[in-house]
Every structure is written in C-alpha cells, then in structure tokens.
Length: 410
Image 1 (cartoon, rainbow, N blue to C red):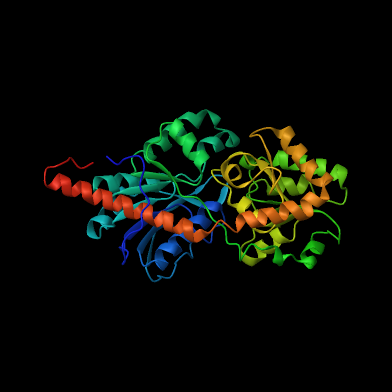
Image 2: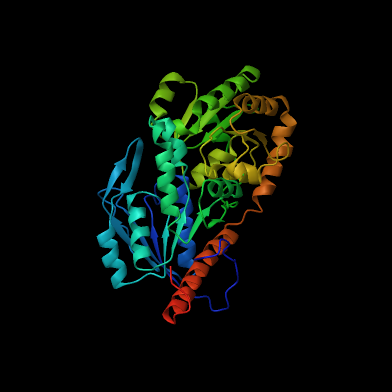
C-alpha cells in the first residue's frame, strides 16, 4: 500500500521515459477547463519525451486526428452527455482495454474523467497491476441539483469515491478540494495545481475596436463573464450583480463569453447583454484584456481556470472564496471575495469596485497581473511528471518485493 504522501523528487539525468496511457472523455478542441488543462499536460509529456497513448471518445464523424510524435490516439465510441452539447461520455471498454494493454503494457494509466470509460480503465489497470493516477476535475455531485436529480448527490459521491480510491493517487488542483475530499473519505489525494499562460493572457491585448463592437465607448465600463452558460454556473447571481452595477453606472455593458444550454433564454430575456459565444486563443485573450472587471459567481468549480486568465489579463475580479480564489485572490489587493454562498456579499463587492474607480482601474488590476506572473505552467508540468514517475517507481518496488516474498503486492 502506498503511503499517503507521494514525495516529489528530482530524478537523476537522464530522466526515465514513461509509457503513459491517458483516458479522458474530453480533449481539445473541445472548450472547457478540463480539456484545456489535459491538452497542456499531454503536450508537456510529449515534449519531455514520454510516450502518450490517448484514449478518448470520438468527438464527431470527421474526428480522425493525425498521429504525432510521442502521441498515439485511440478513439472509442461514445454517447452524448445530456445538456452538454458537443461532449460525449465514453462507453465501457474493459475487454478492449485489456487486449490493448496486455499486448503493449503502459507504465502508468492516468484517468482524467470519471465516466464509464474511466471506470473501465481503472478496473483493467488494477487487474493487470498497472499503477493508476486519477484526476478529480469536476464537482459532478454538486452539479446534480442543477439538472433536476439532486437526489442522486449521495450515490454519485459514493461512485466517485469508489473509483478514485482504486487509484494510487487522486490529483486535485487546490488544497481546499484536497481537504474536502479527504474529509469525505478519499485516500491518497495530492495537489497538482494550475498555471496560466501570461504571454497569451496579457493586458497589452486590450482592443479599442473590440470594445466598440460591444457598444462600449471610451470611458465606458465593460463587465466580463467567461464560462459555460449553464445552470451550475450561478448565472442568476451574475445578472443580479450586474444590475447592481448598472444602477450606479448606466453605461455599463455585460459581456458574456461562452456557450451552453442557457444561451437562448439569456438572449431572449436580456437583449441588452453582449453575447460573444465560445472564444479561444488570442481572440479569447483580447476579450479578457478589453474588459474592465470580471465577475465569477460559480459555486461548483474544482478550480476555475478563468480566474487565473482574468488575473493575467489585469482584470480586478469578484468571486467566492473557494477553489482557485481561496489560494490566489487576496481580498482587497488583487480582487474581492465573498464568503462562499453569500449572494449579498458578492453583490456588495461588485458595487464596491464601481464606487472606487482608482482601485478598479489601477491598483487591483496591476496586482492581479503580478500575482499571475508567479503561476508558471512549467512548475505544474514538473509536479505532474514527478507524481507519475513516483507511483511507477513505488509500484515496481512493491512488485519486486512480492517477487522475492518480502511483501504482498497490492
């Protein structure tokens, strides 16, 4: 059995090259935080000369990705996820994975999502005694109440706990999520945080012409929200907070970047808002940099990558004190935080930013940018790589001891 703490150590040169099987339901070009983070992690493994076998559902009929150096993609059947347009859930694949990994055994299996495909991967890897790392990315148990099946919260949490406790380590993006999961009975939970690309997300990308497209003239106020337009994102609070801003600044415009099932109703009920759809790359970065403040009312994040992107773009922000905000937002310095679930405090924080233009326009935005400059992706990639190297090393050590009768292998 592994000790709960997995030591992070520097391996002697040359670094061991691993065969890593990565199993996921979502991957770029799909637009969401999980896909974005996983895409970066896979690229980092490739760059460090590890061999990656990526197993995921086929996204659409024309999805035939070219093979890349150090990357083999294996596409499996999937079914659409209700109310998550464009995303598919992988079907169970125990027999296929058993054949695949019996013929060419990976050193480690990394399960990024917890659907039937991920469950199959954990079961097969354990049967073949291949060490497993898993990611806890999304609060599915919290999402359940937003989609009309809140009564499933406890069974879903039990399902997730069983899956993750069959892996050697469960990776989470923040200390607060680690504490929550450990309190709920999860074992071997470790933090691999998130970074941000401060060259892409940069205040220098501010675009006066883009602001005019939004209907914001010089001296106007652009209030930004970036994220999936879905029930779990607490959009009703976003609207109430913006209306409080509007009462002070009638010239304010709410700019919403993202797509999702709530978009048609939002367009119908709030025609004065600016809806920009899903954006990526430099286009997305320009949207951040061209705004004046950022509102993030979600209560269901395991991290919240968009917070770091907003900070890197020099935006003062209003958010709740948990996940990424708990670790990276210093109230009154680089943003304003409300106690988790306190809607009134969130709205008052939004008003506070409007009442103090100096705080919003200079001090807080600059501090947010400076904070983001310290969040290097390279450090995150090294942490992830070392966790994989360590569980492979510990697994091999246990198997050697079992071979010589010194200890029973797990």
